[in-house]
Length: 211
Ligand code: GAR
Image (cartoon, rainbow, N blue to C red; front, side, top):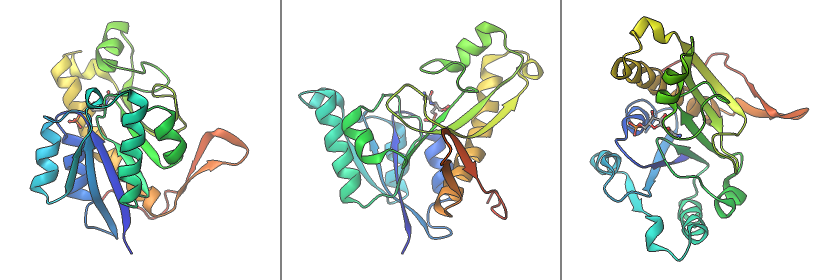
């Protein structure tokens, strides 16, 4: 029995590609479907090239965002997905989705949360002149990038001359390692919410490598 993963995307899909390359079909983990709000996302072509089922769910095709979220949650549920990974999914999922997948959805975000949630996080951090930037992987709740934090990695943007393209490359390099690592840890049952503090996540990293 494999650990069944669904991935939601909106754009380029480099994080999806990292998951396909380092998680999919390994260690009993399988990406069973990839869904997008953007029918033209390059990420969908990456999924199809890997032989993974895709689904297109543009909000405009539904009566409301809530209705779309409910259809999306059912689609993932029918595929018996145990973990949903938001890999560059650029819309906020509402209660119809969260009710079904709370505690089973993670997101990768290009800042050290809770600093700079939402869109354009890298630009915001550079504009703020912060001395440390980074990447966060967190559980998804009904807020914007606000759920319990599972993993973070920081870097010093000054080393990259605050050149946005160089900073973005560094962010991606970290994301492509950190997100697959968290997925492996969750599949191995090594990630749980602290029963004494619902904001805090307990991670048992022993013996789970990067690849
Ligand atoms: C990633 O950098 C991810 O952290 C960011 O979008 C990018 C998607 O790249 N997500 C957010 O900003 C979510 N708030 P990708 O499509 O190449 O994986």
